Amino acid sequence: ALPILLISQRIDEVLKCHGLARSQWQILFRVSRAGTLTQKDLQHAMQVESATLTCIVDVLVAKGWLERLERLESAEDKRVRVVRLTEEGRALMESVPDPYETVEGRMLQGVTEPDRTHVEALLDQMIRNLEERS
View 1 (cartoon, rainbow, N blue to C red):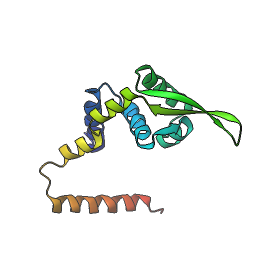
View 2: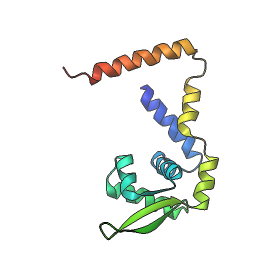
View 3: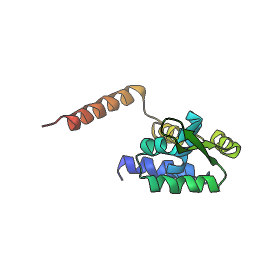
View 4: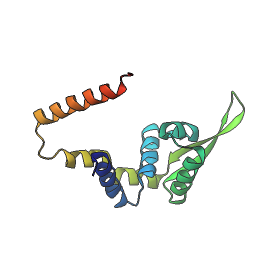
């Protein structure tokens, strides 16, 4: 299997133990870091359609981990939907290990620092090769 697919599967396994999908964790993580975020900012950060984000947020609100607030934007005089973690959401995020760090630690077991440095250099070169326009 491709490494990226294996990484994705392992991340999903870590989160499943906590009753979370990756997109749900990503939203909770971003909101926990920011304190509050507008749904529009979340949509841009997650690179998803508005309807997709709304569905995920609806699930997180229903689970009691996220709450919506309405804020009046003075400049345009319109309401903006803002989300923040609930007390339960904060407790959840404190109890869930960062799945990316968990999987990275597992992936790098037994890999020496020189090997890791070499692989990173090779990957950087491959990325540069793909980024170059022919």
